[in-house]
Image (cartoon, rainbow, N blue to C red; front, side, top):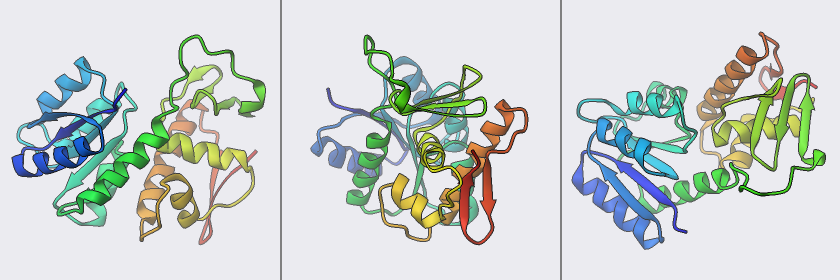
Length: 234
């Protein structure tokens, strides 16, 4: 079954350009010209990925992203005409999985879409699948990480993570005590070459750390090794 992608952009030419490249790759495409319509679609239809412009009439892309993240972990690729570190950090802190600046290369956008879909493709275990073997589960304190179902729980309560957040958590938990640099994390999780994207890693680590500490009564599992990278304490 073809993956369904929602394009949210009020620029008709850009939306059409993206649609052409995605349909050529075999994806089903939905489009919305404003934030409210985008939220209606994500609530009513099953969407596998959202391409979301920051500047939208009415409800802006940042607000749309935050609203989607209240109930869904659907991958979100944000687009913006502004190329500043604070813009990128703001977009990622609201829950976006990746960020591109306009004007962009359509082929690079397609590559980013494929990468995000690959990481989220095994997020849900199919109904009727056999119970997950314990060998696929990592347990650290009250945290349990299940590779098979792409899920994590704290004391049995689900931890709502985006595909990238889960990927980072599983990577660190699979090698407790080992320090991973930003460049290594980026290339392992994003499946792309590291191009001065340390802010992306830093922001996702920060979001992941906040979620863990909130659910684990302030317990700090992820440590920063200054000037080197990050590690997860066992």
